Structure formats: structure tokens, C-alpha cells
Amino acid sequence: MEDSTFVPGTVSSLDDLSGDSDAAFTSATDNRLGRQEKAKAIIAKLTPRETQVLHLMIDGNSSKQIAHRLGLSIKTISAYRRNMFMRLGVHNSAVAVSLGVLAGLGDFPCFHDNATGKKYSWRWSLPEKW
Image 1: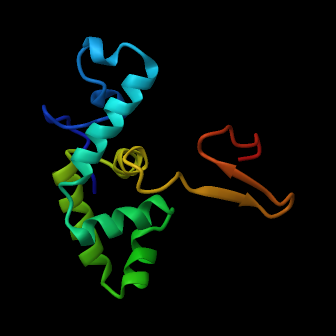
Image 2 (image 1 turned 90 degrees about the horizontal axis):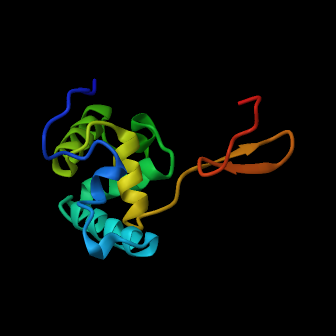
Image 3 (image 1 turned 180 degrees about the horizontal axis):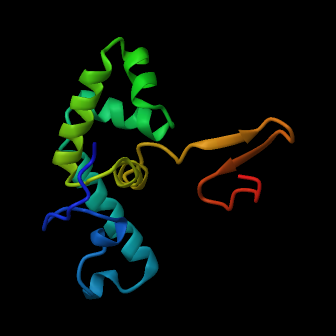
């Protein structure tokens, strides 16, 4: 179960990485690069196993799938996720995955429509039927 209360100094969305309206962040490119460097610094706090779990989360795997792939129990994966959230200062998987993607650990998972053979990503609008 994830706690939805806000704790000062934590990251609740990627907008929290933008910092003050400093001159270094005036252009969109500088802002993106600054946010990317901050995300990399935050991700660097993770242990190698936590980073591996985050990679698998970015790929769209559930905790059960991650446990199966790594040969660990679901409780162990839950502990890794809990510790990862604490180290990253986040409260949910969506922000953790977004930080990982911003830091360059992977890309958002894609979804395949078997009927049409098309591939959709969270970056673009999904069809109305979804």
C-alpha cells in the first residue's frame, strides 16, 4: 500500500525537478538537461538491485513478474520497491518510472493492439477504445 501524504523534500512529480526560475533554466533545452541531470543524480542513490527492479518496472513488469524473473519472492520485491521509493523520495510507481525514464534507464512501455498490429506508447494518445 502506498502512502499519498506529501513529505517536504520529496518528488511528487517531474515538475519538482525544475527548480527555481534560475537563469540556467530559461530555455526548454536547458530545463530538460537540468532535469535530466537531477534525475540521474537521484537515481544514482539506488543500489544495483533496486536499479535492476526499476529497469523491470520501466519495461512494464508487475511485482509478480519481476519476482519470477529474478527468482525472488513478491515480498522481497515489495521491500526493494519500498526502499527504492524512500531513496528516490517518491510515493508511487509512476513517478519512480518517470524519473528512471528521464534519467535514461529506458523508455515508457508500449502496448500492442493485436487486432491492428499497431504499437502505442504512453507518450501518445491511446485509441478511444482503451
